[in-house]
Amino acid sequence: MNWRIMVGRLLSKICEESKQTWRLAGAAILTGLFQFSIAMVTAAFVGHLGALQLSAISVAQGVIAGFAYGAMLGMGSALETLCGQAAGAGQLQMLGIYMQRSWVISLTTATLLTPLYLFSAPILRLLRQSQSVSHVAGKYCRWILPQLFAFAINFPLQKFFQSQSKVWVITAISGAVLGIHALLNWVFVVKLDYGLLGAAMVENVSWWLIDLAQIVYLVSGFFPEAWRGFSTLAFRNLGAFVRLSLASAIMLCINYASWALMIALGFNAAVSVRVSNELGANRPKAAKFSVIIAVSTSALLGLLFTATTLIFRKQLPKLFTDDPEVIRKTSKLGYLLSATIALNSMQPVLSGVAIGAGWQSLVAFINTACYYLFGLPIGAVLGFKLFKLNEIVRNLDWDADWNPGTDGCSCSDHMENQMAERGLASGRASENMGRTNWTAISIELKRKKNYLRI
Image (cartoon, rainbow, N blue to C red; front, side, top):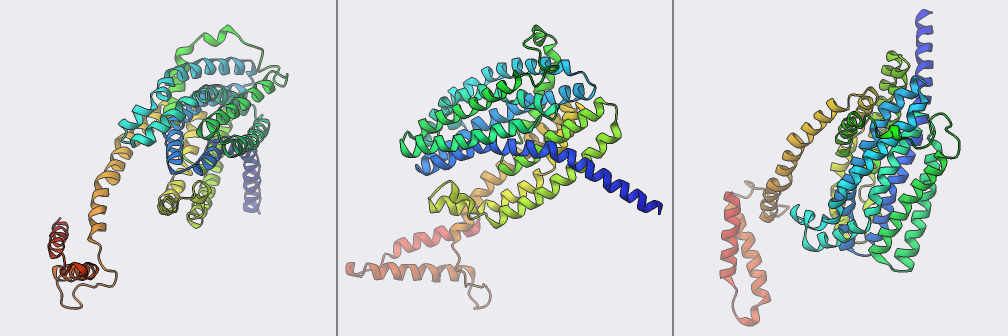
């Protein structure tokens, strides 16, 4: 009987913790998806303007704006540690001060990142992007500069609300603005034909609408203890806050990637709030149990999205472009994307544990080492060195039905036969000239043999 009682208590505890986690994670996931989708909706409308525009906006959003988004999200995540533990300990009067300090640091960081937007074209050329893509992406980045400062206001506000479990209002705001964003894109990009400039202006307006609505919610009297107006205390003890913010930024800015990652980041926010609240209330065992539930749930959802990506890998690119070649090549990347989703389903949640416990510096060091010492070098080898090898293999152009050793022909014999067939075909096409171009065939045969020796 005792084991039944223990199992029943465990199941009850799991259900209760899951409810608390989903209450936070559900809103955080939807908020992240809505806000991340602002960029995706823009890309979907711009992509139908042409392949160049789609390439340019993808680079601008993925490299420049994506880096800034991740950095600002990370800077704001320092509040999850401080505000969460303060809320757990009942020190609500400190939450507004912490948020203002985060605003000061985030706005300063946005100012320092401004040259990244202004000089994005030469930066992209330095990263080996084409001249045309770099030029168009550079213009777009300059146009969306106001969005950078909207990020700096937005994320500290979100963490302030999340630490007090006031999350569904910002979810509603983000969802409403996403609808407005899609409508404005349809009007200015499709109907009025303002192109990239119209898309950039709509994106700026959408982000500042989110900020304005959240500020109205902040000052409307719903947080009488946590928000008592602006204070000069926000400019004190900035050194320690800067170190925590930078560690959080480094820890998170390299993880910003996809819609599916927004799910994991939702659990990142939920588990950081749960852990910081429980640690602030001096309940470490409850914090540990929250970690187990959040990691397990996120891993299961990661497997679900992995399967979804594999199933619909050929349909998803059609949302962003009509170019058959782009669709075909993007579909092939579905396998790599699904593997990335599976691996990323738990890592951001574990980062959320570190944020809640205040371990940002340690995890930032680990993430940076893994990314820059291992990830980028391996990616460079696979992407550039093995790409050349792949080109060599592709240029061999074997016949699908050829099986060496079954017909007694050597590899060289087969290639000669293959090239002879091409030569005969070429000869038939030039019979009016009275002779076959065997010299060209000989040159081509030698080139093929050289590839084989490599």
